[in-house]
Structure formats: structure tokens, C-alpha cells
Length: 168
Image (tube, rainbow, N blue to C red; front, side, top):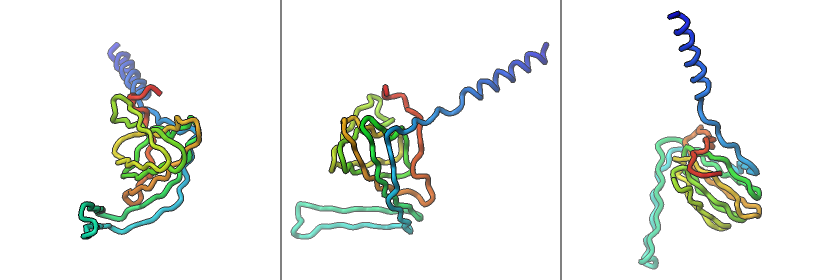
């Protein structure tokens, strides 16, 4: 009897473990990403400032520092009408520019699932530290160009499960 209970408990645990695997990623739909270029950069230490007398009221600077070799990707994304990228993240920051149409971005960290709309010519930064999805809800084709800074050898895109904060 004791052996039977032990066998039943072990079977239950195996069934539970098999059914409680990781959540499945959300596949893209109507979304095509084509890598245009890739550059490899040795460690960077860039600190550029513009503070000329003619620019007294304006000051522009940029700082970029990496500890090791980096990969820089330039990727063109096409998003069909009603298409989307699927929920995903990146292991580094991305500078995204909308080049055609309009896209709507949603972040996994926003409990209200607030849409952020970007039109052709708009740019935004994805820090890469959370899942997000880009959707084309505009009724017309849309395209973006993403410039990504990643540690050398990193996977460019990590598919993620739907976080549950949006109802789509």
C-alpha cells in the first residue's frame, strides 16, 4: 500500500512538472525583419559635447561607453495591416525609427496596456529590459528601422510569452 502511494505521488509530480513548463512565446504575424547591416565595435568610450559660443542656449552631448566588444545591427521591419511583432525583448537598447505609416507599441511593464503611437519620422528608444510588442493598427502598411547595440554574440531578439496586461 505504501509503495502504491509513493508510485501515485511520483506519477502526479511528473505529470505536474510536464504540464507546468514555460509559457509559450507569441509568434509574430504579418511581420518581416530583414537584417540590413551588422558592425562589430571594439570597446567604446565616446563623450562628445557641443557648447560653442553660437550655441549658448543649446547644449548637445552624447555619452556611450561599453566594457567589451559590441555588435551593432540595422534591421528593417515591415508590418502588414493588422500585423504585429509578437511579444519579445532584446538584450540591449534599440533606437527605432518609423519610416512608413504608423505603429503602436505596448510594453509588458504597463499594467494599463497604454498604446504609444508613432508615425513616419518619429523615433523612440526601447531599452531592451522588458517585453514589448509592435502592432500595425493603422489600416495601412508600416515599416520601421531598428538600430541595436548588443554585447558581441548576443541573440538579437528573444521571443517572450504574452505578459497578460493586454487583452489581445
